[in-house]
Length: 116
Length: 116
Image (cartoon, rainbow over all chains, first blue to last red; front, top):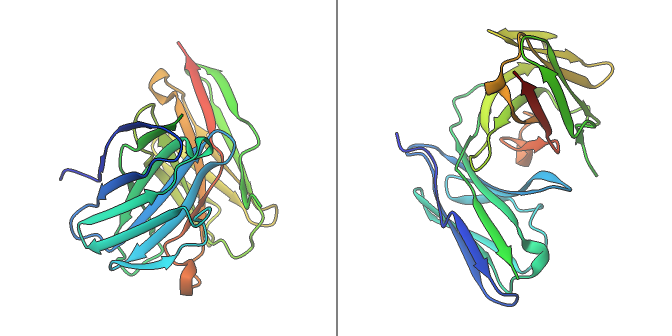
């Protein structure tokens, strides 16, 4: 199994530019999560999907952030326009509901975003 | 509002000794707790979990203790090994249903360094 795949692994852009981060979850998983990691706030949940439907986007910082999941094998997180304070590592994770308390999430390697 | 807190940003221990990582939470609805380990340039990986119906769970060198009345959990690693050096994240979940299902709230992380 390839695990969760994220691209790009590193992104450097200038303030004001649009940034698109991509994620391919583990095949068969029905939940997909987007997180942001910063030194100050640790790992923050931005949004998550169940069966391609957004369930909770209360962590999305502002309207500049948007996420989509057009099908079960692909999701994007878009920032437009980007700002220097968006610089962070963005993780995608997926999980499978198996009717128990077990909520293990499998994380991708992350995308390190730097906005100059 | 940090619902899950790891108050020690870093911990340094000698190989062979015990490592104790601590985590506090404020939300009484949390009923499932997880520890994740993260190496540089990789995504977090699941380590061990505990349900609120238990107060202890062991897996090899790793033991998690839960004190519900104090809203506190800890991860013990015995004996510590240099390969354990990583960032450790505490996470909490509520299985009350609705939009809370599947959602993990993470702490800021603790950097563990195990010296040979």
